[in-house]
Length: 416
Length: 224
Image (cartoon, rainbow over all chains, first blue to last red; front, side, top):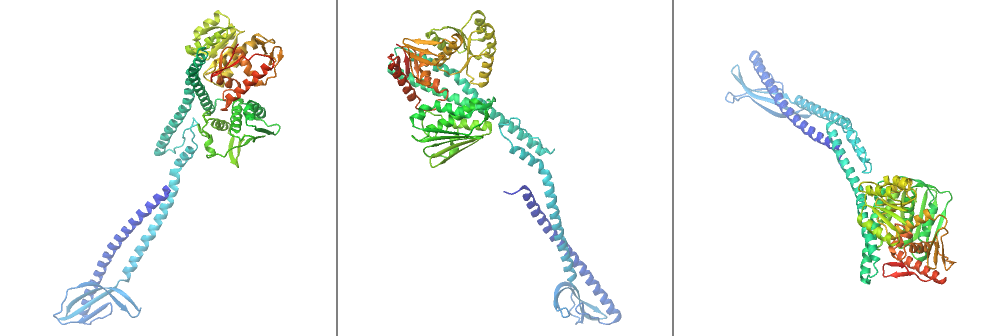
């Protein structure tokens, strides 16, 4: 991914490079045309001057390679013309470019062929200077652009980054969320307003969704109690046939199941909505022991041994109801998924609770177990909400829960 | 025992009063806040069952009225809200017990009986059915005068049957009575079955009769 600054810099570079190339080329062409015409004029002047000197003095002046004058037959008169040539400079031992003017003149009724030359070294020096100047200007400009850009964009984009940082802290749970910075820049002010609208919508939708589960579960409960009580009354009829009884029984079981489901969903929604604010000092060990008693039939039925290792003086502040639900779900799960004749070990220390049991390996990732309505087994008696409830309770108190499986040893740890 | 049931759902009201009447209680009903206020100022009740969600007022407001006019009455709150808030508030205001919808009629009856026992028979509290007697103060059961050795759960189940005698009690209702809202295990009904088998055996050992009858696949009935 490219940074915005990198992208603008790149665009600046390409644009200014091509602008400079074109500008350099044009300057070069214009200047060399100008230089050429200057040179031509100078050559013509020199020729005129030479002719005058010969006319007056009668001396044929020669200064190769700059001036060459030769007598010619009269018939070979030519018009002045300019051309470029390269001659070998014997003293410098190198080729030197020249501009030359070739023409004829008749002086004192004699015909001469005259060649006037001027080196082009000045011109190429001149051009080189131009190119160098252009390039260094270009580099300088680019550096300036780069630093200005860097500094400016840091300043210009700073509200953007603070908006971004604020947004990163967004959670639909936090109903008072609103962006505050915009840096007094119209675009960012607009972004801020739009984002605030968006987050407000997300928050309100989330709240509606949360309330919905709660409200829907409420509304289901009253009709359900009517169904349940009517079926219970119907069951009391003395003359029911076995078939009628069986049908009433399945309708009744289903209504009880539905009642339990809505209760669990309501419970989940309430934990989520933080509606269990009362908290007190909890004696987790006694809650565990009473649940072991509550589940004693299942524990005996599977010939499980349950060991509690408890450090003395473990205390915990929480809502009793939630603490009981946590234990009930974790212990219930451990019993349900244990091999027969195995043991369940409960380790209670200050600040942590660990429940481990021996059972068949998981078929899925352990994270999934905490998903709502996820069932590890297809046993129709569970809704797959137990561990979600545990998860929500932990979230409500910022407790950390981990689940590990190693060699059939399942271990749930809650760090308070 | 005279009971006032304040509940806005007519069908539920009917079912509740029907069940309780059959259990030998005298039931009066009120389906609105207004009617309830009326009944409360004119009559005295032993037990009042109050649904907190009424169409024309908050049931919580009725509690103070009940305490003022019928201070001796036992008060059982019914709510669909299943909210601890309401529960705490209700109990703070002087309610004696709290039950959430949907509930089993047998459970409702059992709560009312237990409430009545606590309120009206302080210290001397016995339930008798032929040769079986339960003392709820000492949690003791005697058959033909001999004490039974029951576990706590067996005692709870037997008491549940004794107060809901002659009625078919569903296994679901027993399970919830014993294990609470979230009876976790699929084999709860097997556990109930074995508890009931044990109760029968223990009663028969003391030359008692078997009053616990299986009713198809539905549940059990405690009767002659």
